[in-house]
Image 1 (cartoon, rainbow, N blue to C red):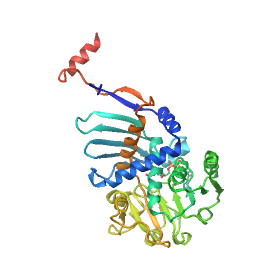
Image 2: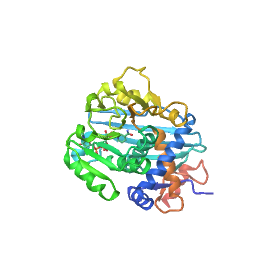
Image 3: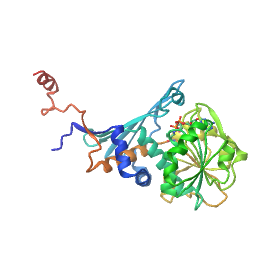
Image 4: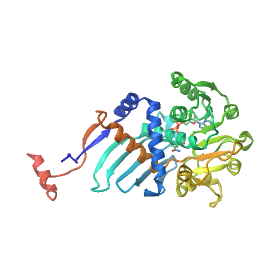
Length: 345
Ligand code: NAD
């Protein structure tokens, strides 16, 4: 029998090796397909808004779900002030377990995996909602998530022109430097207005713990797809309310998005469409060329589950993991104390 007390652990180093060995764009495309597959079987999953512990500086959250056979959860934080202290705004790790016996089957770093899954989700959604043939994306907020967002939109949707803006030009210079070898035509922009000129997709991915207004209503023309992912906590939004009123809004899991997303600015019964219904053909996505579609993405547990499931499958046949002695599992199940005593000799 397999040694169930040994759990494969994917460190940051091994995650980077696996992603590079796979190729970032191939990894993102594969991940987007796994996420879409899980959105198709959405009704199977245990779903609950994430469990959030808010503080003045940020939030720490647990994100659990299960498809009845496998259980997963992610620990994640969001601390916008961290970046100025030389720390990540978002860090994460997560776990998969066998529902049959409750034993963990995978433990992984998820700071990098979260950036990948957030980008893959954005691109998977844009594949359904963005205007046909969209090639130009405005990328507003050029922090840790931004290059992942750009590459997923390229790999999954064919975006090859980027218009980048950040209040801190150093962030934009960093993103342009990192993306230089990936075949984008890139423009350095000095304002959000400039960034969205001619863009069919607008991604907002800024971090600020307030009701920010990255875009105002007069800036947004007909027919665009907005991928709003930076607003993901109570009191933390990016778009002016009037943009929401002009848009068809698509969400992951309404009970969570109503608390955390852009739609916290709207009445609790404002109509939104669940993305899994669009993917299953039960609800329309983009209907016409002038419609503004808005993905109010906050990040949902099923996407992390898909990411861990994808990771588990990609790991097969590789050595990009360590064996972690994580579960105390004596040969005689009732002799846990005996195992402790035997360790002394
Ligand atoms: P980060 O701190 O690395 O980068 C944020 C960037 O936004 C910084 O470069 C900052 O200068 C810029 N910025 C702040 N205010 C701005 C403004 N008004 N205009 C333009 N740029 C501005 O953060 P990150 O890791 O890239 O995350 C970005 C946001 O995305 C965070 O709020 C995070 O919580 C959120 N996030 C969402 C999901 C999701 O699933 N929806 C997943 C991960 C992160």
